[in-house]
Image 1 (tube, rainbow, N blue to C red):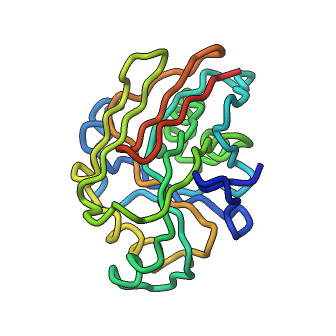
Image 2 (cartoon, helix red, strand yellow):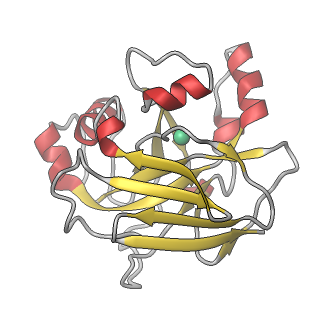
Image 3 (cartoon, helix red, strand yellow):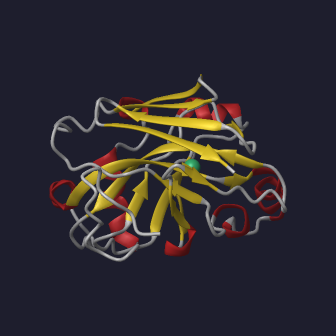
Length: 218
Ligand code: ZN
């Protein structure tokens, strides 16, 4: 269950926590009928939520339909506490793509009751992560492009320029409250186009010319 670099090397650190941001793309907030928050809406998944995308991963539909949210994942390589944006940039070890899997019906129920989201967002297997790549070639963090295909249909087309809180501001802000440690991941929010995953779906996650991951839902 260890995450790996594209080179095949395992990540040098144990799996860490995953800090996520909700509604970081205006068009996605709109599609779910949510207001864009004044401050970034943060939540976490534990290390036990992470599964590598590999060739296939298992979908547990026993608690309701599971929705995908494809997101750019930032790999943290140095500790960050109350960091500046420059320190945040220096602490990025690499990137990957992740599926923030969500029990959407349960999440709506929890939201209505004013309860925390963990039951809908932080369950085992709720963070599917591709292989990872280093920072080379990612000079402009405001111009990172990624795509998610479900059965050859383009579902999500993300560009970091559309993030409401850009990557470095987001890392710096997170670190004001939660120390980020080597091996942690930050999921930077999902663009519009979220939807239901089904067993048998063939998925493809593309990060520019750096990653082209194919996986299947079992
Ligand atoms: Zn998400």
